Structure formats: C-alpha cells, structure tokens
Length: 368
Image (tube, rainbow, N blue to C red; front, side, top):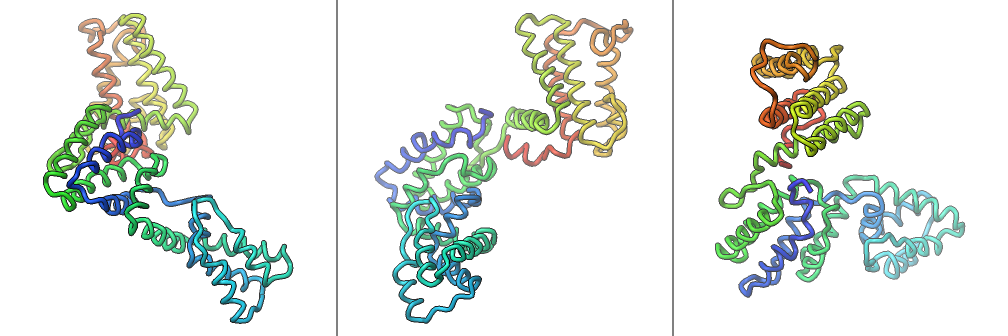
C-alpha cells in the first residue's frame, strides 16, 4: 500500500459510509446523489462490461436488431416487427453478463439461415460496442436507472470495487464532492461528521493526505515523495537496465540492516547515481553515459543553477573516495554516515522528473 485512498477503498463502507448513513437525520435517498457523483470517478466499461452495457440497453437492443436486419437485407412486415419488439427486444435484462439469446431468437424468426443471423448480429453488436458515443449513451441510461432508485443506488454504491475506479485523483475528487452532498442532505452537522470520519480514516490507514477546510484533500510532502519514487520504479517495468539498476540500489539499501558502515552507505549512494544515469540514458536523446554528461545534454532545466546543483552532487560522488573511485580526495571532510544516505537519497530522487518525460509531475502530486 502506498498511502492512497484507492488501496483501501473497500474499507470505506464500514469506516465512513455506514456510520454516516446510520444516523437518524440522514435521508434514505442520499446514496442516489452519492452514486451519481461516484460514477464520475469510475472507469468507462470495456470488453465484456461494454458488451453487456449495449446488450442490456433497450434502445440499443432495438438498434442492434434493426442494423442486423439491414446487414442481412431481410424484409419484415410491420406487424411481425412490432410483435417481435413487444415480445423480446424490450424485455428487461438483469445482471452484467452479456445475454444475447433473445436477440438471436428474434432474428431467427426472420432470417432462415442461422449462420447469417449470427454473423450480422455480431457485426451490429460490434459496431455499437466500438462507438464511444453509443457506449456513453447506454451508460448514461443505465446509471439513470440506478440513480433514480434509492435501493439500487445503495446496492450499486456498496458493490463498487477499487478496480472500477479510474484513478486516485478521480477518487479524491469524489471524496471532496461528497462533503457538499452531506451538507445538502444533512446540513453542517452531517458535513462535519463526514470530515471527522474522513480524518480518522486517514490516520488509521496512514494515508498521505491532510484535510484543509472545508474538505480539501491535499497530498503531504511524504506522499509526493512516495508517489515520485513509485513512478521511478515503474520505469523499470519497461526498461531492463533501469530494472537491474533499481534492484541493485534496493539490495544496497537492504544491506544496511547488516550494519550501517561507511562502505555500505557509499554503495547505496553509488547505486542510486547509477539508477539516475540509467533513467536519463533511457528516456533522453543523449550520448553521455555518466550523470554529468547526461545532465549537460538535457534541455529540461528551468535555470542553469538547478543543473549545476545536480552536477555538484555528481562531483561529490565522483571525488569522494569509495563512492565512484578509489583515489584519495583533498575535499573529503569526514567519513560518510547515515545523514549523507538520507540526504542524498532524497536529493537524487528529487531530480528524477527532469530525467524522464514518462513521469508526470502533476500526476505525482495528485496521487501523493
């Protein structure tokens, strides 16, 4: 867990929503509005879910049937057409699993060749599923059915899983908007109770947010750092050399448990410099192989002093005996200790966004 709400979303039902809605002063239709807001934070249905959405939508079931008839070149008289619609196409389909059997049966009444019937129905379905506008229309109608029913809204809200939520930022947007909903339905008393439960939840699960009045969830500095390092680690999933350098660095840090010697501290700092070099070499059009040369060829710096600060750090790692080289240095003032490990780890990690355009700094902050 990285201190994100999305990782512990499943716990919010018992920790936040149940205590709030058990209050006597809370209207029983509050989940209609909460679920309406939550749908804005959910992923768009894809694959089987998108197929089911289309099949289970009465409007698009009719469109699918009409398109299949058109593709097959089949003619059907109005009376038969209306009879089929009344019997089959406008039936209520329950559940999320695609159920196309009734449509197949309807086409079979009109098209004598089953193979043609299946082919044109599959094509008609595919056209609707792959049309973003049609998917959006079906989703809106499906959500409206839920939102306009307090029982369905409650059930749908409780069943939302973290995997269905688009992102941490989307979830934060919902949690902040929920505060206004609490105020609308229960006044300051309910809104304040919500903030109190949210605060307790953050503390209980060590989430990396502070709450600023009235209910703004602000990432903490530790949260931003954690998010940044996580994104740096993610680069290793698409680049083998970065993955190896990351493993080397992590192994060096783990080795400190055997003793915080100056040699192990030096190894940690050295391995992190190599990791930053690997990231810079992989994600920039540079020819250099060492940190100083890579930073010279990069164009992302906001001011020469920022680049110089990194090059000074690199100068330290290159000149200090036992870090990158074994020769003595007149610049050495003392042996390395844990102060240097902590400071250098934070400083070097902080330069990562300059080295890779695959790290979105705004996303790092919002997911902090």
